[in-house]
Length: 173
Length: 173
DNA sequence: TATAGAGCAGTAATCACTTAA
DNA sequence: ATTAAGTGATTACTGCTCTAT
Image (cartoon, each protein chain N blue to C red):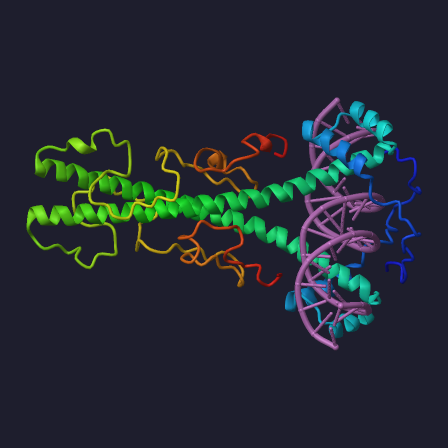
């Protein structure tokens, strides 16, 4: 199997880690183009005193890192969107209830919607093709996979989500 | 590729990778405990002929990998939930509109709601703390194609989501 | 208060595999 | 068909934070 002992112990000053200047320039190059045509690659390598191979690898790793980081942002953004939509949803529900009350008042009769809590009242709602057949208006499923998952459909949708509100990762932190 | 500094070799003699058996057992250990108390660590290391350090590092990397993978799943699940909520939202909106129409009919005139291009009409809606947002109510389709990101730029047209506009994903897919 | 140790994020580098010229 | 470049998964290391001794 792998070397029983990997004396990779840094030879005093491991030449790993590129200098800040090199990083700065690589970063700048990455900002303009996430991929490097061989032309630029050799050029950058020469300018930074690195081997083309290292530049190529740096870009590869950079793309991978960027992807991960971006996914995290996307997730946070989506979570925020969800929270916002959730708020709007609740709001809309209240507005609707208000309308229902007014209608009841105007029409006089007592409605089956008294205790409410189940959308779909029997007024002539024409568009009733509700894709997922709304069962009960409140919490969403959100069972997500795995055990530690949660995001518990309720604690999270009334707050603006600060990325790490409900942690399924509590395990790791 | 022509790498100037790599010892020419390959053909099934990769001395870095752990053996399948080692991986299998590490994986099994990870399944039962994502973290290893020093006790187990030394034990596992001995059993697999690895240094405790290597076992520790493997677990570290494994946790990181798991986290990424899990995040992807969470994202997909959240996206699906968003889509479902979005549908319910649309549905609710239609119901509300229906009620508004009925109310207008019963009350004769409607005036106030004329320009309302969507939610937020001024009936006695007390809770009007719409977090932010509510620009235009529409278009949040999205077809959630398989596993790869996609999910049709909803993130770009619905909520605040700033930086890194939409366009990044042209390179990665 | 110091200090040894564990976890973690970020990196560098390698390898096997896939893709495009 | 070769072959160079990209990709995903890995192994390992460094530096920092936090924690318990």
